[in-house]
Amino acid sequence: MSSDRISNIVILTGAGISAESGLATFRGADGLWEGHRVEDVATPDAYRRDPALVHAFYDARRARLGSVEPNAAHEALARLDTEWPGDLLLVTQNVDDLHERAGSKRLLHMHGELTKGWCLACDERFDWAGPMGEGASCPSCAAVGRVRPDIVWFGEMPYDMERIDEALRRCDLFVSIGTSGAVYPAAGFVQTARYCGARALEMNLEPSLGSYMFDESRTGRAGELVPAWVDEILRQA
Ligand code: OAD
Image (tube, rainbow, N blue to C red; front, side, top):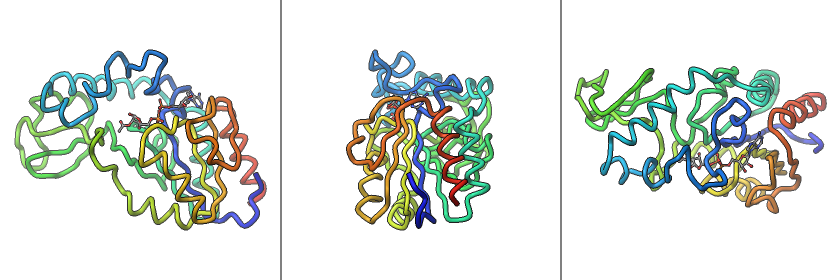
């Protein structure tokens, strides 16, 4: 894809970009997410019904971050962030911290972060390391048992939507990496960007559900496709 007149780039990433680091994607062949149905661990209802199960699930995922590293795709996007002279916004659906550990700065976590907690008593959000569990106490107001993972669950509003929408409307190039296109609003970003005149490129292991909406679709592993694309676009910058 040529970089003619490209100044503003918006990049959307999903679980596929972290797969080569060893983190499971969501929509495996068995339809389960690390052995659980999504409704049992990733909805406000699930949390009300069985907070211990939901905490155990996210505590395990937070612990797992300690044994994985950013891969070549995260590193290439961090390099692009440093070297790209125009506007750039990386929007990730991922709750892992691999983009920031690779060095990306112009980054939004639209579905929240495993490394943050949210106190339902005082509404503060804060960094969180280690297990949270049901009895966690809030570092801000000291309330006990009111801290939940700062993760956007199904039925909740993703973060930073206004800022993302504004960037999509202004971008010249929209790039989607490692996402199945099954979850809205992220799955609709390509439509907004294209409607407002951007070109759109997808990189995924297989064509996503919304593949037909992109100008170009590259299939393969993010760890190979993304560094090659970053080289290509920086060469033309
Ligand atoms: P999915 O698991 O739905 O999709 C991951 C995509 O990555 C699939 O299309 C895979 O083919 C592709 N993939 C796998 N390995 C890859 C690799 N090495 N290189 C490139 N692509 C690869 O994950 P998401 O689309 O991120 O939401 O899921 C979106 C949201 O659904 C998540 O953020 C989460 C989930 O429920 C919340 O938790 C709110």
